[in-house]
Length: 365
Ligand code: FES
Ligand SMILES: [Fe+2]
Image (cartoon, rainbow, N blue to C red; front, side, top):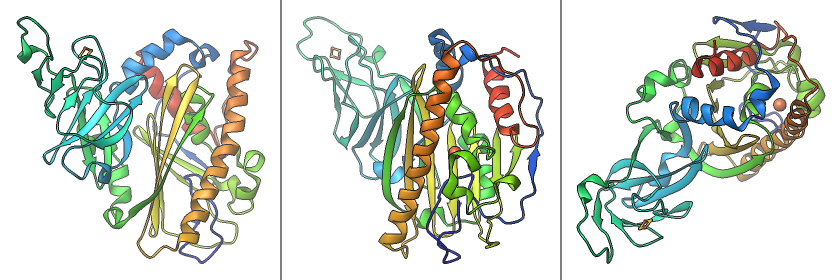
């Protein structure tokens, strides 16, 4: 978020809330109807988590990383999103995606990770599927089989400006429509010219909403991110809500100017874009009280290794600071003593946004 490359300043933070737009005013912009804050049980209840999986993570687009990972025919990427094992593949130039769940007895086609293949051969008993998901053969089955009825269950895959997205819904909102304000806000940047230099994954012991809410406010910066606080005027951290997205900004303390975009889209996408690079952050639950955070760092070709490493290190340090407070909040929510009271009208509209969108998705409003 800091203008690390464009101002020649220090190579520090890289994440959304630490921008340097310079002109942001204190407070927030709110264009949605707030709801009652979520109860503590919403952060710990396994049954509630199941409903969020179905109503949110099986319906919204989830960013997976850079599309270059599937550039070559036969390249695949297998991972588990919100307890849905999926596999994405380049089928002779066509991006496809499937639940990584065999139609026989639920074995996996491939283990989580990446690689290349010409077909999917189930790891359990060896049924073979084409990369288009159709069952081609059932090894040594010993009887008739309606192969045409036993294709892999498909998921929807799409690419936007070099980024890979998946949606578990068979007919989701088109990705560009879903991105909303993120598309025009990032239009001026040469995303396609960036190259991935680093990826990192982090497992947090907290409900995904604790992390999402933490992401949505700069109120905590002075206490949780002291080094970051030296560089941005967190009192003037600004969050503008546009539909299901938010645009973040905060002036730098030294008055330096940068041209960046710091964007968030419900439920779990953050894009921090600069002239010299970009950080894609995506996160999803791995259970009721655990969350996986995935970073993909992109840089312009003329970025030095030192600059890139410093930006990555800084970002991960901030994540670790956020981890500590989010995991502590999670323990406190689980203690049973907390009852939701008030949110700051100046700083926490983004938190309200998360509550509103979750409530709406679950039809609880
Ligand atoms: S579970 Fe896949 S072949 Fe048996
Ligand atoms: Fe933070």
